[in-house]
Image 1 (cartoon, rainbow, N blue to C red):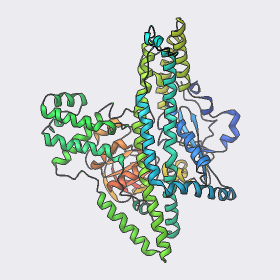
Image 2 (cartoon, helix red, strand yellow):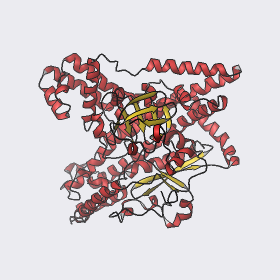
Image 3 (tube, rainbow, N blue to C red):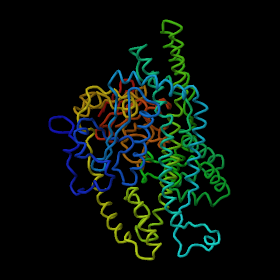
Image 4 (tube, rainbow, N blue to C red):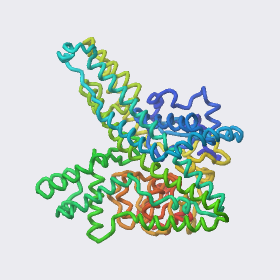
Length: 608
């Protein structure tokens, strides 16, 4: 923030020391630019810490660039969302900033309504059959990615190439494979948004109906009426519970008392027939359920469970401990469903006419029908697909290492995808004509410089907002997913203190209930093993693969997120209080401090 309490212009933010030239890491259109200065300074931008909390590695921009295009297209060109167009993106000092393009012209919004009703209505009326088709399409994209072969360049083409009269070479196959991998990512993200915006729209329509019919209804009550729905995003965690039960049934649970280091666990299990039987159960769980990123899935560096079993091993030991204590591992699904049905009946009884009650039933029914997709797509796309995608790109990285372009496989992620395309052409041209490529003398030095640059960018604290904040935030997805509201923006500019002696935080009441306990501040997945029973999790965001920690904690506090963020949804399913979107939780709270989390009011008090 500037000294006058306003957000800085993106053109006034200085480059961190030692980070000069960072702009060269990204495509030209991704930068704030003098050609668009008037337009860009006239908008409000916020840092997307929910999906992209770290600097964007050049290659990793493909994930956010894919959603940049697909989200916008479905809002503005396919379903004609009445109040919203797309969400714009820019990179500043390596961090992603986004800006929602909301429509404010009531006449134009009115003209779009009929188109939206016709197009979205078709999907809502045929949701189940279209969704089944979507799952087949998504699994087809994943199967295509798995099947892609990344060939090497042989000293001589196989004689079969000649005898078959093929007319194509390994170099052509290599270029085709790279292009197919890139296209595959774009294709999956188009599928991602085929349903997602409609899922949010149905919930927001139900939300708006409730707010109009019951002006004093808490946001959590609306959300709780749509909870209690089993979604596959919980399945990986359920597999850990199953594996814990199997370890106890087979009598090998003591292995996890000795170690949770993955290689050591596997070695001990291989030493006995019972352990080998357990390893067979592990293999049965891994595909697809361990294609589960330890982060958001948007970065190559957050490895998935299938690549690194550290998180699953810690989770299995946790569940073994719970089982020995006689604890119930399953989520309180029936209790959540009883409460949602009680709330729905309670509010329906307040409506004056049968027509009103029927309208509530229809709106609630649609919201419950579409809600599973809002969570399920996350497993198919950001976890299962992205795990395979990052590992497929690593196959190209290994190819470049073999040919001297890089020192390490993951060096490829320090090039954006257009640079990789150029490097591939450098490689095949060299192979084709038999002269040295430039790449081995060009890229190693540049990659080394970029590694130093990224370490410096990680030390920079990006301002939460840039430009002129709107008087009122109205764009619905910005509010529900990111938790960006008029109040939260003002809180960034002028942080409010709550609680006794002003020691505390305020945010969204993500999940109801009140809990007290010692804080555990977690800023990386490596720290999850430190969480003790009865602590309150304080983190920037939660990710789905953190599910094993929820049975151990009393409440959750996040820096980022709104009512439909993952932390809010999961805590409602587990019956845990949550305050999300506090902005400064991880910077304000220290591990060990005693907190009182009020998920009804959206406040966090620091008691000592």
